Amino acid sequence: MNKDTFRKELHRFADWIADYYENVEGYPVKSKVQPGEILSELNRGNCFEHVGMDTLLADFERILLPGITHWQSPNFYAYFPANTSPPSILAEMLTAALAQQCMIWETSPAAAELEEYVMMQLRDMIGLPETFTGVIQDSASTATLTALLMARERATGYGINDRGFAGERFRLYCSEEAHSSVEKGVKIAGFGKDNLVKVPVDGNFAMLPDELEIRIHNDVQAGFVPLAVVSAMGTTGSTAFDPIRAIGKVASKYGLFHHVDGAMAGTALILPEMRHLADGVELVDSFVFNPHKWMFTNFDCSAFYVKDPDELIRTFSITPEYLKTKRDEEVNNYRDWGIPLGRRFRALKLWFVIRGYGREGLQAMIREHLRLAGLFAEKLNSRKDFQLLAPVAINTVCFRYVPLNYGGDLNELNARLLERLNSSGKLYLTHTKLRDQYTLRLVVGQTNTAERHINEAFDFIVRQAEELCGKES
Ligand SMILES: *Cc1c(COP(=O)(O)O)cnc(C)c1O
Image (cartoon, rainbow, N blue to C red; front, side, top):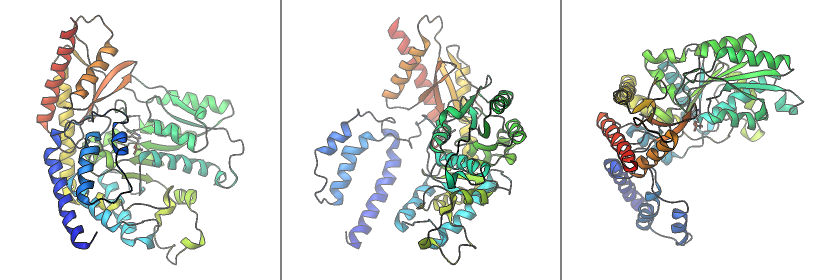
């Protein structure tokens, strides 16, 4: 592609992006394709034949767009958000253009120093004390694995890195509601998932610290070595908050490494009035949250904070001759702060987002999401045939339809309601199970979700639920 064509295409793609955002509400939020449909369409073409941008863009629209689930639709309420924003998208365009490889300071001094700077600013913005140092990871899953590896190496004098496991019988703890990434990390780090102890939760789905202590105590009696506990600051099922301070007391009594997974809810900490959710976080060893979930920053960007960066670096550093530089003592070589050697320039979009909105702008957007989630919950509460199934601590509303005098299976009814809602294309919700009850989850977190969308979503859900039951009787 010559430079004039490249310039022309850049403008065309910029227009495509602007048009997409203007029309995003017109697409079915959840893709309607069946498994294999996209692949068989792709198989009809000849991938090795050169084509121009006209053809590529046309094929993208014809073949792939129908298979896109529109995470950036304001009617996206599924899972947890993975939102974005104009400043983030613009920064990602620059990131793509510069195509940096940010493994060490020398390979991109700006990336290394911006990352150091922006992680300090973000730390201050969420109210973490200055005793924490941050690094950007690709995902919360990676950050949690990284924390577990730090715990492993700290407890063994960095021995397992050298000699492998020598029969240590470690035990790790999280709540029954903790994210699956904890179990995945435990498996990858070599502990064995049978050594992950799932601690019971209270009526609000938060870990019971007394139950944690009982299990640690029993494990010690049985000859195990309790190693680490992961607190959930906002579980994925219902956004429950483990009591970090009380868990921290148990952790320090038994010498456990304490990691906090605040993947989505961490963003709420930019609001001073929400900091109580992380009470005790100053005592923990590490903390992760994802600006790529709820903080308007393109996937991937996960903010990982540690008390002692030396422990982190000692766990991961390997310096072959070809990566040694004269400045290694003076700078951050982020290759040593996590698993991969190569790293994307992720700090740029975070810097753009924070400055593009300002602290108060971000706070206003998060407050509005919290208000809208509260509004939706209130509307549900005003009806006798809907039931909230968990507290609405932040932006997740867990509920189900309970038609009056219904004799059938409520789990099955709500599963059918969800299917009906999602196949309409008008909105997208997902489900979980809480106390064996099939639970619909509505999470308010897309950048452009406004009161109008919430009102429409509520009315639509009620109408579909009523029609579903009307059909049966
Ligand atoms: C989403 C989520 C994760 C995983 O996040 P990734 O960045 O996709 O790895 C971990 N923990 C919780 C509580 C989550 O909600």
